[in-house]
Amino acid sequence: MSEIEFSVLLSVYSKEEPEYLDQALKSVWVNQTLKPNEIVIVKDGPLTQELELVIDNFAENAPVQIVSIAKNGGLGKALALGVTKCSYEIIARMDSDDISTHDRFEKQIPIFTKDKIDVLSSWSSFFEKDINNTIATKKRPEFDAEIKSFAKKRSPVCHASCILRKSAILKAGNYQHFPLYEDYDLWVRMIMTGAKFYNLQDYVYLIRTSDGQFGRRGGLKYLITEIRAQNKFRKLGFLKWHESAKNIMIRVIVRLSPNFIRKRIYKIIWSRNN
Image (cartoon, rainbow, N blue to C red):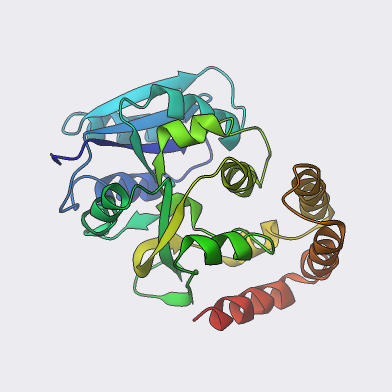
């Protein structure tokens, strides 16, 4: 256990792959050099027997707190409830199909506590099928001012590799129901309430990806969500008219392009950050 007390928070729903969930859970407990004090798993609606078995087996040897929701309501609602159930002020996020490196918390937690940060994220690597098959890497700006400037264009931190301050999340209104934009929406509201950000300049998080995932980042539905988000950010006073208009024009091109072009665009954008 860590001398610095912290929770890990992740949400699971019925379409998750049991094998991936098992790997994700082990990566934040079994393989960690700095272990959390609790792992809060939010069951977002009924799960398959296979997923339930993975969670039950894991809970036999780890400090797990289960939070169950009767009906699937989406990531924003699940995480909002999960935040309120976390026992500690420091909350580490984790997605149910990704992998944290063995020293993720050892590297992140001391910086978070020493510098009194509210949101601490990291660089990340994207892999297909095998963790050794890295298809892209994504760096992010390091310091608070740079991060907040970057946020005017796109999400400035890796959501799933974040370490978060519970009181700062709640001050900003907690996670809200905003499908596909739960994290970016929260970052903007936290910026507006004075939260301090930092990005660890190291790859401590591995994101599972596929052609299908790039496909889900396109289409009219995704674009409409982004337009809604840009309009909300403008109404909050975070963006000016010309900034939101420019962002929307760029997103029209990306979201309505064929999948193979969109995948190439993402790789180009990520490479420019390297």
